[in-house]
Image 1 (tube, chains in turn purple, brown):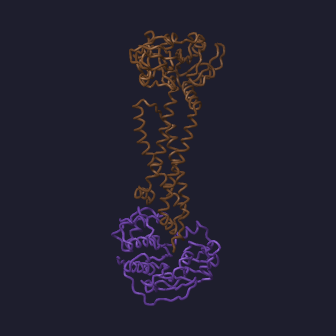
Image 2 (tube, rainbow over the protein chains, first blue to last red):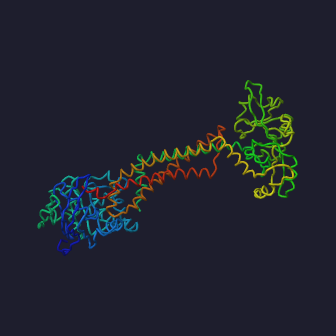
Image 3 (spheres, helix red, strand yellow):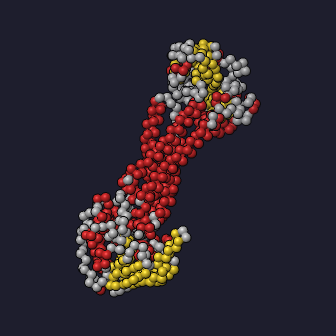
Length: 247
Length: 377
């Protein structure tokens, strides 16, 4: 499958969003009147130096933070209109997250890590287990699912984290610096998996990173600086992702 | 459901151990303290709990069994008139001075004059028939085996009570007294030993058994308030035992001490347990935040923390129960008075689980740091 299988549908839209942080008397304007649209079925990369506001943008687009002004539309819901419980429900049904730190529970094996959020979706034990196994197979960890985080490499842990997000079958998948803590080969595997998820599941994958190695693997790259989008370009010839390549 | 709370507890048991120990020791301290207090102050009512009487008839207003005054012998007739009463028996209780031959100086003793026949009500549970039969001999007394060294006497030895020579014909067990030494004799011997002319050989109490012990409350109420046979008051055995124990607990301030210590134990236990749980939550705060980012509600995360607190409490109590049972058995073997009843044990369990629960609630507060936005950098 490729991008053409999914006609361009805007699933995330920011309109004139502004966000400032106040620390003591100091007020820092991180985003000021920023607008953008993100489409389903492709991997969109927001790149830029530290402090450019890209993580804040991700937090706002994913409903983890509120905007000071403007509005965010995600899957036709205006996130600013939702209360805390509704936002949690929205995230439960529609979004997946992958963070730089893998944030896996030390006590659980890979399958349990993936299964855990599925129970809160109301899935039965059997269905949760089947989905978890399927997701772990999809990220190439079929034979490692009985292992705990301490027995997994960094790349494998991040793949467990991706499987945990993927098993929920989210329409929106957010990744924050997913490769920063990994070596080159593992990082390559991770970005390939994210890319493939966008293509095969039609998922909107929004990735934030300052890692220049990722640029060649994205469908679209937004360069950010000082809270503004400097450039927005599509990478036409992105290499075909390898399926389930182990690190 | 993935048992996150339990699996984390097992996997990170070292982290949770201080909390488990804190709950366990708080429970154990509370349990042993309660058992000791009940045991020690329970001996204030040993005359009642060691006997088979259902009703006690004594001087009006008597607050504790050791504070009785002689009552009119005619009261017996009034009690016997009630058809529910099966048997009535006198009991003489007196304070006396013991002098042994060994160099032990004077000792304050409490003489219990009882009917020594085998069907007698007094000390029916504490003295086997063969032993009580020996009291038929003039001037024969029985002392508790825990007091025999204190009295400087052996079985068969003699001593003087209020200047009157008595002979020790046997030893009992479980008749330790509070603030003195119990000496059991026949009613006749007790009258010989009583030097107070005001008593005039009258009994301190009448004790009665009923045809149906379950009627004790109703019969006691029926017998009360009839002044025609002289002043007296009627209590059920259970009520009088409770009255005596409470008098001692409140009179000595031990009751307040118990409550005070319970408060301290609870506080210290809760501080240690809550700090341990707070640290455990803080150690997993990024994982909790990730779950919240994935849409798992804060309420569900709170349940995980509370479930952990529950398991900590349950494991602590399990340890306290095992250790407590061993220590109580050891204490009983050494004649240390320890008594536990179900309500008090339940109170200790509730206290320990309450401690774990309060600590869990305190630890929940640290979930506020599990903000998923803080995971983005």
